[in-house]
Structures are given as structure tokens and as C-alpha cells.
Image (cartoon, helix red, strand yellow):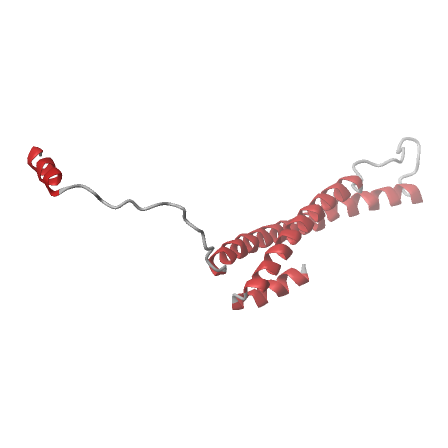
Length: 140
């Protein structure tokens, strides 16, 4: 991500090879950010403590296992905010990288030299006679 950001800053000079490198790095940054976002979501779901494994019936609530279970549930509930913040950061990275990739793509098209297309079209000389042109204008 750092390399993509540095290339985006240096691409402000509109140097064509730098713009192309910036485009490639931004595409890579989008893919990496989406991968990180998916990884964060799966990590979050797999590490949530939804309910306590400890059987409360018949046990003293002050024993060590009960305390540990309640602490894990409390920390799991608090970690939701951390994961939500991490997902927001990842979403911002995806958005910024995609926006810069679109910008680089448009600028590369503008800054590239015009292509030289060879045209095989033949131009035909206008062989209409004056009489034909004057009769066509009289018909109108």
C-alpha cells in the first residue's frame, strides 16, 4: 500500500511510465485491500465468543472458569468496535485505490501519444457536370 501511495504522489508529474506503474500498483492495491477485508471479516467471525462454554448450573459463579468465561464474553463484545473500525479502514483503502486506478487509467489515455492509423479510404473526385448540377438545382 505504501508503494502504491508513493507512486501516486510521483505520478503527479504526468510522466507516462510513472503513470503506468501507478495504474498497475493501484490495481494491485485494490486486490490486496479486498483480500484483507475478506480476511478481516472471516477472522472476526471465527474469533467471536457468542456464548459461554461453561455450565453455570450447580457451580459457583466466582470460580476461575466462570470469571474467565465472563471476561472473554466482555472482551469479545468490546472487540466488535475494533473490527468495525478495521473494516472501515479497509473499505476506505479499497475506495481510494479504485479511484486512483480510474484516474491513472484516464490520464494514461490522455498522455499517451496519438496512434497513427493508416487509412485505406479512397477519395473520389466529384465528376458531376455543370449541366447535371444545374438540372438538379432546377428540380428543387
